[in-house]
Image (cartoon, rainbow, N blue to C red):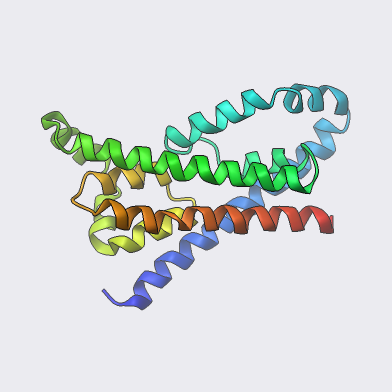
Length: 192
């Protein structure tokens, strides 16, 4: 497959990710204007006074195939403290996401040896197997940078004979995503 097709796949998913982030930002701004503004102290206390709950929800979400978009947690972190606190949170979120992908990869390695998985895996990964066959390593990069389900793709890759070191190197694009998205969120609030 040529590079042009792979890049088109990547950019289409990046555009979907940016669109998703814009929708989340718009919903957040609407909620802030019409819901939070009237009960500002209640909302702040409810979410900002219990960071361990937020971190636990985030970790669970990343391990369970990204139930919540990480950008929601970046928005939370932006309003939690100063610039350094925000940067530390984004770095923490990136590290957790990278580790959750690696854990999913290892689970995939284990599952490929389980006989029952050979049957269930076809059904569970049916949407993503053709993508992996078509794009290979490029699917890892695309999942790391876009809203494709990171942990699910990592688990899928783990069920193959894909080299672990190569996976871990390509998974570093996940940290790049958090840096870029975190910067966009930070800059968008600086302009507002």
